[in-house]
Length: 157
Length: 135
Image 1 (cartoon, each protein chain N blue to C red):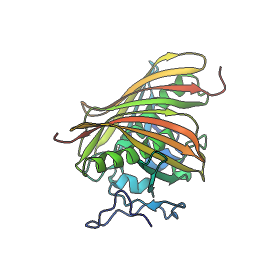
Image 2: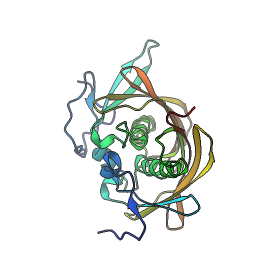
Image 3: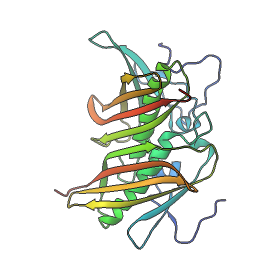
Image 4: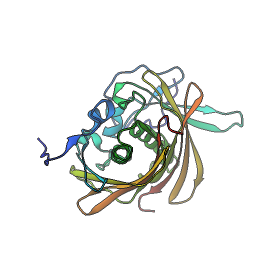
């Protein structure tokens, strides 16, 4: 079992609101934000791509808490997942200094449905001393469902 | 219990909105919408501020309702949502939201709005919604 990207043995994570088995290859992500635990669980894995670079992937399993009235994932849930995954990449890249979202842009391509596994590959577009540019590509069964780009600020820098 | 002003009702109160909200909304005569949500501990991040995902979710509900009014309730879906996190607030308080449609075509709707607490703007948002089935 891989260690989660957000592992921290010095604290006890907040238990997620639901018990969901980790998808194959993924580890349950320890959650430190009450809101992410309320919407979770979330899962993550790190994989080495064909270019030899390490990629961060995160995932969640869609259930009825995440759906809108059209029975597809609420845009707000996709935004929530984007903030959690892209924020994890930013936070770890900054040696876990507190980071805040400055800006997030999302294009919604398809609406995932209940039972789908939504996966995100988060990547660092540029990192400066105080600001990080993070991109996210979101998939269900390998089909793109959302693209996102975001800007993060390290507090105090 | 929260204090619900007259004329406000829980918007699209199923699934996500019912679980995370309710988000109370009201349509105004000029076509804009006004919303509020009373924050709870489960809306926060570990530092005691509203989670960015929660703020964006509230914004999606507020902007989406303004869009829905502009198209007389025809089914719509968010195509793009852009959000800027202007400020934050470390208090479990009532958040408000407002949105207005800037342009409506046959198949897409442009909308803008903001989330605020008192006189402090927390988030500004713009988005484009698709009117489903319209070309």
